[in-house]
Amino acid sequence: MSKRNDYDYFDLDNFDDGYDSRDYRRRQPQRRQGSYNSRPAYNTNRRRRNNKKRTRNRIIIVSCGILIIILLVVMISSVFKGCFGSKQTNAPVSTETKPVATADTPKANDKKNEAQDDLSPTYFKTPQIKDDKSSGYSAYSIYVWNKQGFELFGSDEARATTYAETINGFADKLNGITVYDMVIPNHTEMGLPQRLKDSDAPSTSQAENIKSIYSKLSDKVTPVNAYNYLADHNDEYIYFGSDHHWSGLGAYYAYSAFAKTNDLPVLSLDDCTEQQIEGFTGTFSNTASGLDTDTVHYWEFPYEVTMDITDESGNLNTYTSPYYQYAEAGSLTYGVFIMGDHPLTVLKSASENAEEGKKIAVIKESYGNAFVPYLTYNYEEVHVIDFRTFGDNLVSYCQQNGIDEVLFLNGVMSANTQIQLDSMSGLFD
Image: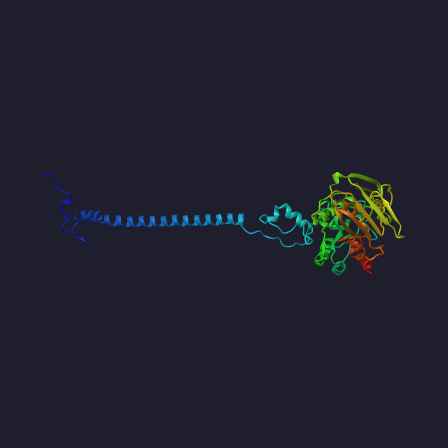
């Protein structure tokens, strides 16, 4: 007979889960059996843990899905807003290097709007001036740097206001006539480094002065911003180094600004014949030494222009060109442009682009001499009036000659000099 196993004494039907004081051999099967019978509770706990884990995973998955959907909605909204959103308008800017504009504003890549900015009387570029860090020296009101002379400028808000109010008064008297105003910066603004203007050659900002003038002009006056066109080309030969005037090329860029302001076609210099005169020694040569001589460039037009000059004695002379073709080297070479300063000069054009009967009067000092010939491309008659010597009443003159446009053109020095304003006011006596 085989030996009995201790497990044979364990009665599953009468199992007591209390403590049994019987010997170890009889309690041992009970402990094993008890461990076996506890497995259903263990399986239940495991299922609960698994359910919690699955619930947690589902929550994480759902949350991630919701987050992804939100991000997609935001991205799609941004794309549609960028493509179909309303246009933005740039605010007027100061004389900083560039206007305030960002990559997502329409003007950033819109060439047409950029051109409009160039003509805006509130938008002024900062000229990029090459600076070799060398120093110069003062010669009275002239600063000499790199063998060129620079006429220093000084003004204030009161003078800007006086000039603007003077032009506004002229526009009131020229009732029914379109009035323009153009103030020309000089070489110091476009060619002398700012570090020198802040120290050795103190000169106030001409951009601020001109912008202040333009901001005070009435609705009857259209400002012409030639400043930006000159700033764009200041590395070219647009001013003389020995003289206080601009060159024929500088005057051309100002003419371009005027033409574009009025939606007029612009004369191309490529269609003209360039001429030049070497050895110009300008007004600075009288006060400063060591200056380089200049070359005067001018362009003959592909159409005929006659010029009637009335001198201070009232004598009338007629010429077949707006340029004095026999001008020579020396101190008077700038006189190649309309033969210098005269009370009245009338240019008559045969340009195909000049509308029949279209006339303009330009009220100027000597800065206007290099400028007015280009207007013959667009006007049948250009009446050039030097306000310093013209003796007639401007309003009557315009009425008698059928002139319905008037441009006041002044260099910045003239615009800020009271004696010049008084002289202009004499046109209305």
